[in-house]
Length: 248
Image (cartoon, rainbow, N blue to C red; front, top):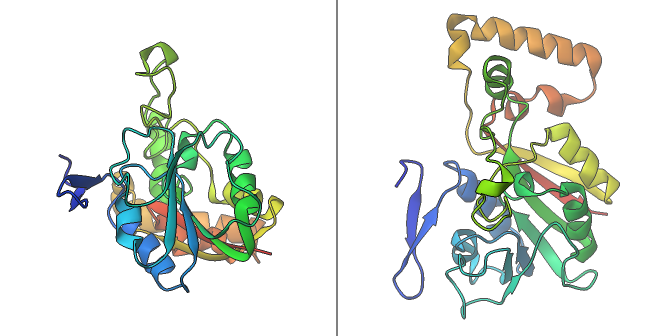
């Protein structure tokens, strides 16, 4: 088991493994646990680690492409769902939607965001996370290696276990914070909070890192002086970008 993985027990004593980057689940839980009780859609649910932590806090429905991977059958409603398509729920069905490390696996993240907006009630909240490819660390990795953090070279389709990259947990679609924000606003949602799991720096730049950071901040401010999110610490040094959005 990787050092970053945490284990939790399901209702039968089986271990659930948190495979997200450290602090990601905890931050999402802290956001959603502080909100009034409501109907929550967790998509994708994975093994059910987030679901387990929010059981009793919200009325949860879990969805995922791989029903055999989910470990909490019988404890919460579960549906097998491909997030590249239309969600099997009516409009305004949920108060909250959580999407932890999901959109980078999808061929059509824009459709997924639109579907999240459709099933949310007016005033509902979406919490969505994805690897932050706008961090200075990720930008420099792309400069030296040709791929961003969390996006190593993708296997060929013939190598996929089921013929689908989603089943093999392949990261196939990196999105910048600006692209995600655009998708959210286009779907009728407004960003109300930008968070991260933890801050990281680019070790490759060593003592030059502060200089590189200042250059990026200066250039970004020059291009978009009023867009403070673009030169916030969350965007420049956050490992995972965690975006909170509200449906208008």
